[in-house]
Length: 103
Image (cartoon, rainbow, N blue to C red; front, top):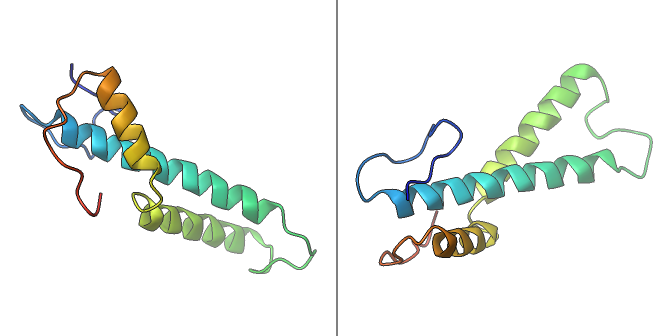
């Protein structure tokens, strides 16, 4: 059963690539989840003095920072591996490939 990401962008292609594609999609899911977590945490600031000044440019910069932090942390928190394991069972993908140290 082929696993398709959002239009398959950024996912390995070709026969036998289902585990690699699923692992990449799970890592992307973890990045999106962490990005939402960072943005929610940032929105709930205790003080009224924003860290980056509070104007539109600093809000954009802060959003980009959260995205980059989420990309860097994705695959290291364990969420992607849990998603991969669960979806590989549901999709009946052979787990002959061992998880790599870095996703």
